[in-house]
Image 1 (cartoon, rainbow, N blue to C red):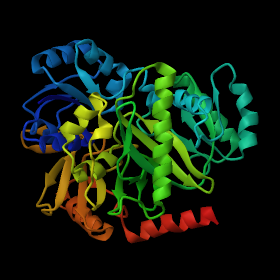
Image 2 (cartoon, rainbow, N blue to C red; image 1 turned 90 degrees about the vertical axis):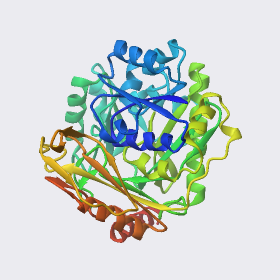
Image 3 (cartoon, rainbow, N blue to C red; image 1 turned 180 degrees about the horizontal axis):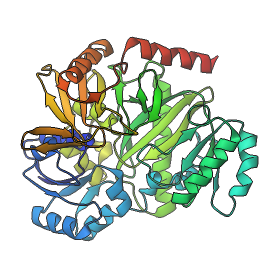
Image 4 (cartoon, rainbow, N blue to C red; image 1 turned 90 degrees about the horizontal axis):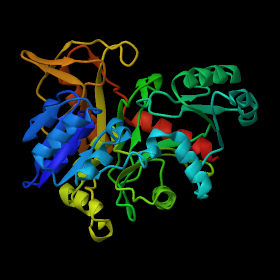
Length: 436
């Protein structure tokens, strides 16, 4: 089975590992920059830009894949699925039109509103011409969230109370966003606990993977700037400490309705990962956003637990047979901690040497933005290595992840509090306060 993997991060390293559990899987990887984790698992690879369609086309012609798996959002936004489809290659990943679920926050909000799907907060979309009307809406909401209409690498959303204080600050940020984006979305601020529900969709059937909680803030106790994600955890019972089975079912039900609405709206079936960023509030489950691919780091929490053959799962997505296969996950807890360069995300220490020591046998390392030189590994300007602990419970998984993180030396730091009892109890207390 020849598989084309597009992407170069830790998420794609985890995807490559999942494929290689099948001895028949021959992997061909197209990367923006070399990732030794991915290239060591690949029969062939090519380094190039995600918008160099000629090079991608040549590599696909040479590798003759049975299907392609698109890891990051950038190539989805560029229309890579449409390009490969034109060559007769099916992809796990939506077309450019359907990728708007992630690439255009306004598309998603309007879709949920039009098809009366629950979980949509109060929102309005503004552009250059009507931004003057935003002041009244901000005042009406009391507390708001500002979202650029487009991709921002997980760093563009700003929340009142966390990133700015007043309505005047909100308007200033709206105007800043409109310098680079066609529109800005202003939404009500929701109080609750966020979680990621990554789902697999063949356009008809949607299957949820175990829920995960990500940590966006750079420093311990949720302090500092937003990042691409400093780490995440999942629990052995496939819930989270503040979630019930009903909450997860509600999140899946919303996502199934979104998949159905996408088909009604566009006439196309959504085949790929539909990752719901959700929040549990006093009113129930609300939609924060949708992404058109696995989360990074959340992919690392779920893919190693998958007991089904990932190649077969992908074939079922392409052939719309997801309802015919059984996808099981090990009843294990996972904790993922990202090692990032000192100064990340605002002023990361680039080109600094990293040394990987002896890591615990049960830990996994997934390589992200590191450069392999003749004398070893070096940092770039983004997240470096994801350290994953898997065990029977959260406490043991956290210890394994922490030990692995401490075995890597260099000008790096990580959030030691991810997956710890103290931080999780803080989350539980917050949820109790919200519900009371």
